Length: 334
Image (cartoon, rainbow, N blue to C red; front, top):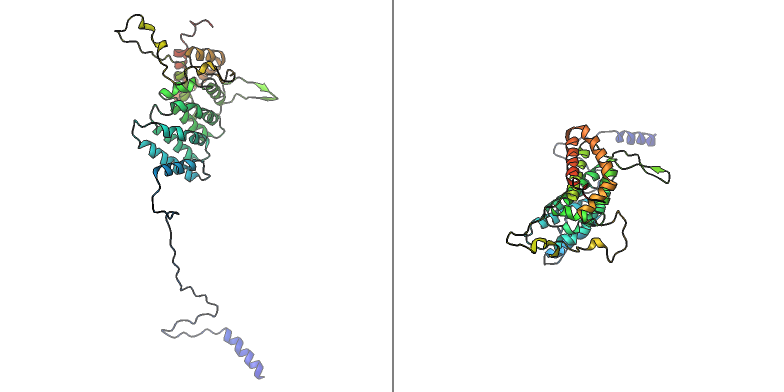
C-alpha cells in the first residue's frame, strides 16, 4: 500500500503548479542552453592586405574583365565605371580606350539583362561624335541580330544602338563597310515583314511584321536615318575662289579622308558576294537599293502611311528620303 500511495503522489506532483514567491525568478529547466556569451568578428572591406592602393590601370583592366562576368550587377557596375571614366576624359585625348573596350562591349548589345543593355546604350552616347566611327563594323553583326531578335526589349535597345551608329560621321562608315548597306537593309525588311516570300527546304516566310505600335514607329524612324545616310548626296566642299584652273578637279588627287580608301576594290582579300561587298560609292548603293529593296520598301511604307499617327509620320519621312536620294538615279544608265 505504501508503494501505491507514493506512485500516486508522484503523478500528482507532475501536474502541480509551482508557487512563485515575489522577487524570486523561475527555476531554470534542466535542458536550458546558455546563450549569454557574445562573439566578435573582424570584417575587411577589401580582401587585400597590400598597403598601396590599386592603380588606375589595374582598376580599368579589372572592370574590362568584369564585362564578361556572369553576374548582371557586376557587368552593369563595370559599364557605369567605364562610362564615368570616358566622360571625365579631356576632349582632345586619344581614343585608345574606346578601341580597347569595343570588342568587349559589342556582345553586351544582346545581353539578357535590360539594365545592362540600357547601360551599354548610355555608355555609347557618352562618346564624342567622332569616336567609334572606325569600329562600327564590329558592332553591326550584333545590332542586326538584335533587331531580328524574338524579344521585344532586345529589339528596342538594338534600334537605339543602330540610331547611335547612324549619327553624324558614323553613318557614312556604317553604309560603306562590308555588308553595312545590303545586310542592314535586308534585316529591316525581315523585321518589318516586307521581304519577299521565299520557299526553301519546305519552309516559307510568312511576311508578317514582328513590330507594331510604338516599336514600329521607332523602327521606321531609324530606317529613315539609314536611307538618308546611304542615299543622300553628300555636299562637296568647293575649292577657294583664288584657286583657278587647273585646280578645279583637285579633290581626286588629294589624300583620302578615311583609312583604307581602296578597300572596296578587295585587291588582296577573298572574293565577296553581293551581300558582303563594300558599297563606298553612292551610285552603287542606289543601284543595289533599286534592284533589291526599293519595290518592297515603297509598298510597305505606303501601307504604314495609311495607319496615320506617329507611324504614318515616320513612314512619310522615310518615303521622302527615298524620293530625294533616288531622284537622280533615273538619269544614270545601268
